Length: 287
Ligand SMILES: [Zn+2]
Image (cartoon, rainbow, N blue to C red):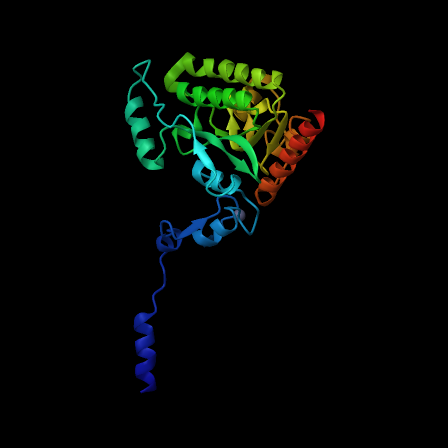
């Protein structure tokens, strides 16, 4: 009898192969790219997609970021109907855009709109790195410029979350022009004395870091976000010097005066509300 029991156990005991151990069931579990900890996706979501073991901030989609930032049910989207063209007839570009549209259920790499944050009316824009690496083409630039213009007209503070690989290669010089366009729209906002808070998330690079995302009255970043213009190797080859280990991280930029604050995701919404509160009460006293 006892022997049978052991036999039975043995029959069901399977040792997972190396490959099975490495494979993580899609959607149910997620592995931290930094410390390798594997956890339930649901647990990770409860923790705002921050690794409990090492504090790594996973990327958020634009809808997730909006949900986390804007008061529930208080978001009205702008310019949802703006769609990318293929001005240079770049090979496979329309197909790639279409694929990303299906994958993300978004029309472009940025979602803009207005809502309230802690009760304060605000214009909010969020980039989504799943869509063409969050690159800035004509539509992304236009949506950001229009968001800034609406914020200027309505006198609502503007909050932009960037996550981008830079200018969109497939639109060539038209993408580069978005740097000037978004910067000019923000200059108008500045002249109207409307607050602009830029939140830089991992990664914010290239033409986005070199334009609107660095132009905030207040520039905030999430911990350890990669922020920079050119890649490390390009710079090292150009200046012929070894760069420090933490170069282009949020913490490095804070130390060197490029950022005002590095804020953990769990405190980000409260920090924004505090800033909006200061801004609105300052404005009321002034008027
Ligand atoms: Zn981790």
